[in-house]
Length: 248
Image 1 (spheres, one colour):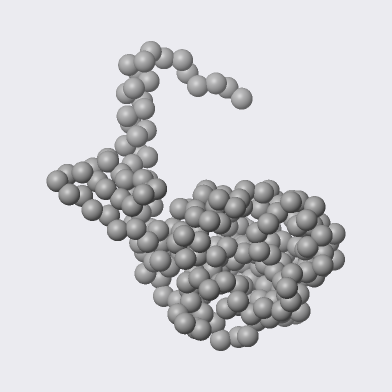
Image 2: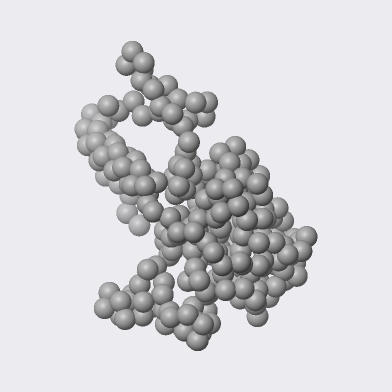
């Protein structure tokens, strides 16, 4: 791997300012995309999914733990596997108590869901030293309905909003070609209004990588960061912990 070119400080500053302009444009585009995501329509969940946690059975509403929003990480863990997916495990290593506390402060819960039986999940979770909530969807349609367990004998194969024929045309058939059933990664987002639950968003493949801190997760929810911004007398202010953008 080659190293960057060595230049003078003045030359570096010119190049850095050019890159800064591109970075700020990306930031503004991302902010606009996040706003579009918050305006995305939502779908009411009418099926009664049953999960199993360490304390017994739970429904989808229980996974919210009384909060307004729910983020579900679809952790790849087949019922026949002894261990969970190594890539999902790498992401789960970064789910700290601090991350969960920041999400909880924004009325948002984060859990993991896998098809493996709860006993196998609990053993693996204890071995890894994780403390986040993790539920089994074993025996439920949940993984199939959210297209992270692919099995055409249950539902037509779909991943990242493409069916098998669409993947073939796009040259991405590697996502849907394996011995079925097989597990795929994803993250799904839900909003609660009383006892009614709505699906607001799901992302898959690289878009489902669970890294980036609490703001990354909140930007993918229906309510966003839940912060009001003001610019009195030309100065940007924001609630404690928020990061104002002084680029304008």
